[in-house]
Length: 334
Ligand code: KG4
Image 1 (tube, rainbow, N blue to C red):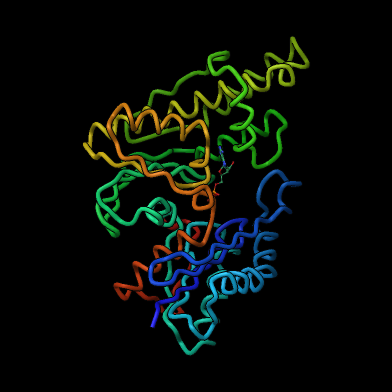
Image 2 (image 1 turned 45 degrees about the vertical axis):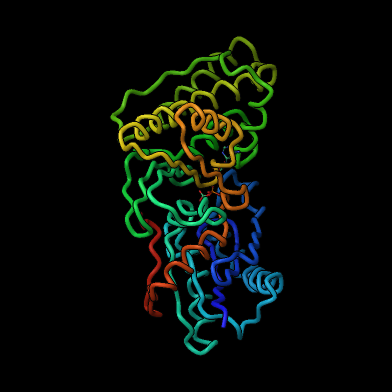
């Protein structure tokens, strides 16, 4: 009989469900919550309520698309952290109830960050070692992956995540939330060398983006004093220049760790991994440094349950199950 796992991801503002059957992803349903745009950020309480109402329908769609019934499920997996407490609790409670209702079928807890780290392996398969640049709205780190359970953080942000920096910079320019994708698309039409921003000197195992956000706000305020239409008239060049600066900061660290570890395979994960500028820079870097570059499909970069399902299948093979007392942890680390 096939091993069919239902995976549920509700760590932030996307309600996601996926079916993996014998290691092959059969469905990947993502329902994004639009309600937060009017508040300029995710409202945890609203997110939890939305998950509660959307989850049954999202799960049903994932089963239908995969042609799998509840009765054919071998296990249920859920994201146990990091993320927002309420949303995580909705996903874990739903999964526990379902496992119980289906006759105590195995329950698997998956770290959201591991999902992002292994997203590139969904289509490529697991081969070690590799370096992964994890860049999302909540995390920014470079990790060394030696095996499924042996992951070392080489470098990480000491303050804001890269996606968070993008979103805050977008807000300063009056762009919609989340602004990362908007900056990326406007940057394609601008001159990346038009404006310069200060660089932060920090050790090789750290990155920092909060100072840049302040520098950017001052840059906008100063220029807008003499030209009220400064943002409007220069939006493409501003976006191209700040994107160039942000990505350079990350890529410089990556080059250091590629040289330091001698690892020749590079992967990316997290929402910012869909960034066109970043993908271009890393593709060129891979050619220059003779690296294998694993690029996850865009639908595996955003928050999704397929990456949770992929990790759950690995855990299922090794019998890594949890009990109904398994807690969620909003601050769970790698
Ligand atoms: O991984 P993700 O979906 O959620 C977290 O788990 O954090 O990432 C969302 C973040 C947001 O900050 C969003 O602005 C950013 O990823 N993002 C981008 C792009 N697409 C999404 N940032 C830069 N360029 C993009 N193309």
